[in-house]
Length: 312
Ligand code: KMH
Ligand code: ZN
Image 1: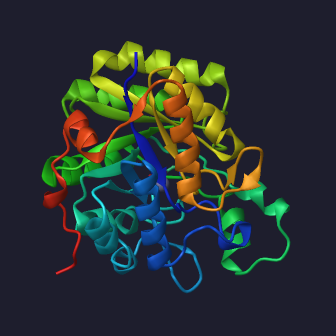
Image 2: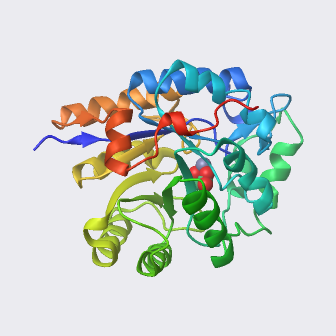
């Protein structure tokens, strides 16, 4: 039976760096254009990080977010999903500053502390555009991506219960689903839950169909009918696992945050190219892409008029 499939596009992130692809959006104008084009191609949720427009370094400065949030909000009705993960080198207060000021309909919420290794990317490149790039990759060898129970509860109570955001629960391992189920039992999170199964990040589960099935079986057992899932797989795993996600009844996340390429291993020319690719697959399998308003009603979001897209 055909159904509506949600495409999230994560347009820039904090993993890949400008040396790795000339197509990675960096400035406010580039992030806005990438987001608007991804929405036009069929993405109904745009997952957003910022970068310093001078050098492309991951940034959680609300001023940098103001370089693209108003433009995207004005140009399209996609659901804006603001990262609370930032990058593993940022403090929790830095990571939360953008969502605290924008009060978005959705935020990401990473469900446990973990290693988040991107240092292995370093050997693929030689001539770096900026010194911060290899330094950031190296730093992930001795830092933890911190998401303690207290951190998670701060986000749930302040941004969720306080500001009315709903969450993209990023689960990189079975234990993260257990933690989400704990908060569901405590009544701190409410259905419908939107769970992002994250595969292929070093420090989380590898990208294998067996791991995906284990994540889904665990969520089915612990969350029952109270959740929908989406799949994000890093690097070259992106498109195959998104396809598998659609077949298994889920939703998908693509975008240059998670993979710089399109099959068979070419650099993606844009975020919209990845959205178009997965949309073709979704439609070939007999489904349709969900519109932003269908996402709003399906995930019980507060509405696009309720966010602070324009700094006062
Ligand atoms: N880049 C993803 C693997 C976040 O922004 O909160 C994880 C992510 C985290 O999207
Ligand atoms: Zn992110």
